[in-house]
Image (cartoon, rainbow over the protein chains, first blue to last red):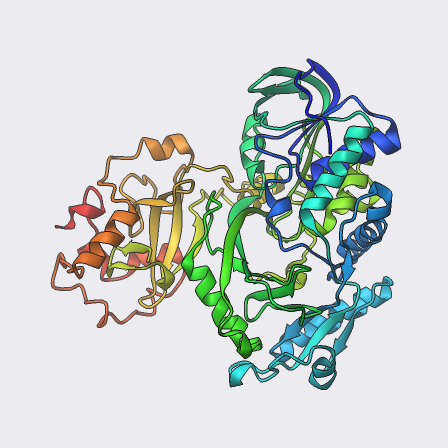
Length: 395
Length: 170
């Protein structure tokens, strides 16, 4: 797949901390588009072992703010051609994404999202229960009488991508262009002098670099502590689970924020499911029984016939949450130190567009126009990009 | 089941509590610059460590402060406001890791152990005074359900305020 260089050089043009999808994509596009090949991607664990391999592999662009919609729309465009670009089958399959509304107020937000989406050229529409029954006949629209479904936001381009393959394919692509990927190389410090980054301390020695990008999701606060910057990021676990494999029956991705549930069927037949963020700050990837119990309860509201299906695995990732549910990307007060964080529960779908825009940002030392609204400075400017209304995950 | 100790109602399932976030010092709104105010509003101690946090016991309307290790998910102590070493009458305490480490020693009981103990024997609540209602009888007052800092004014508080830490009650 890719080389595993034994020797860590003492200097690179850019060091990327975090060998997840975002970091590897940034490395790939730095090499492909800007000819910057003296790049090292460092990871404390293994490639794609963080949230890249822990998400539920859903991609979509049906956001609420124009800034968000434009950004994720570009990501979907890149995703569609990515298998060809990287010559690796990512199993990109458009499934259609249904966000259910159980109340009239939820439906109002969906109407808002649909109109913003359509205005910007993203396919989204509010559908009423009769049409919903036609699209996904398996749904119990009465939810056992608890919280009847009154409509849904239907986003046909919503898709599933094999998430591990995205990391592997970017790693291979970057490697072929000369980028070095160093796994099991924890960063222990970041050297900053007179407001400029000089390089990173690692467990394998100091590495000099003019540009350092941190793309480490749940570990962001620990990295920020190394450079003495405060951010609004807090870490909360997000759990997920899969059932035993079933014959294919569920085409769509079904989401209900009211029921704290999202579910889709993988190409292997497993139901891949998630619920809400764990309700308090915790730096841990532990799983809980509470989570599966509440998820199963809500799943049976929508699909009562799944009562006998067994859960086979569960896991968690550490979500880097921001107050406005938008990411933090781009430059920081430290020259040469760039951020890609605040990806909370919505990062996987942005992998390719993070790669292209961060590569641009590192190469030009100015934020790509698509990520300008997501800068760290937006908080002190009170210019937040509120995306909570478009979050699938209950919060 | 994870348990958290409410200073009024004793050990209760964690599902009865709502998280209120880190206890943060509020700068003087009239004197703070926009930047300082933004930092207060948005920034948090994101890295793992011992944090003081607001928690709310929903059934009884009790706001409390818990000192918790956010890496191990172990609660070290809980208090009604103010915690013992809080010098100010307002939520104005330092909340860095160093400050938490220098807090007066309290009997730390990891939740897991307590949960086990709770399974083997039903927890008996040694009420420190007759004024404290048992969980089932506790009726939240209007004050008790209001904003967090006001909780210090609730009538039941002085009677249940433990001295020298939460485990001093026995």
